[in-house]
Length: 180
Image (cartoon, rainbow, N blue to C red; front, side):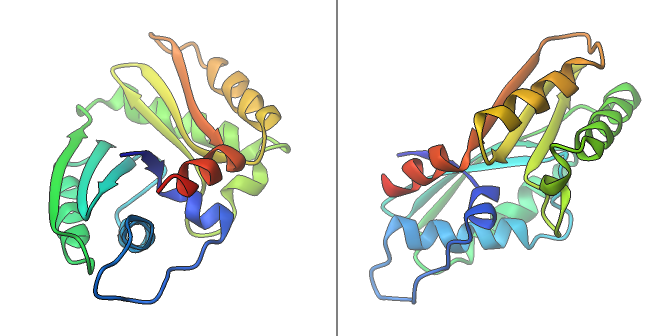
């Protein structure tokens, strides 16, 4: 089983494979990714990951509202080839401080000239997860330099806790997808 980031497919431009009676985990992943990214309430303040093994999808991550976790589970269950969905998506606690911090960090990230390209399109690839003042950057960037710039920008906001950088490069995501 391998954890893979959904926004990676958009960044890499992988196409989904044709439906078949016995679909591979990669084919299922492609369609699961589309279901999550096409969910209209999925934002840069949510993060959902999937482990897929023999058609069993384990969803993990954090979302800002409880209904998002159940909606995403239902959408994923409808994907051809999914035999079971194990939903371990957590709901972030309600906090005005966290909400303000999310917005300020996201604005700074996407206003930075080196990172502006990641904000283009309907699904920006850098996600800002804030839980009780602790910040996690999640998603996909092109290279290590962009990962370091994003980390530097996020650290500039003096959150209560440390800033965790879970950004992956497109090369790392490509290697993870090849293992499926």
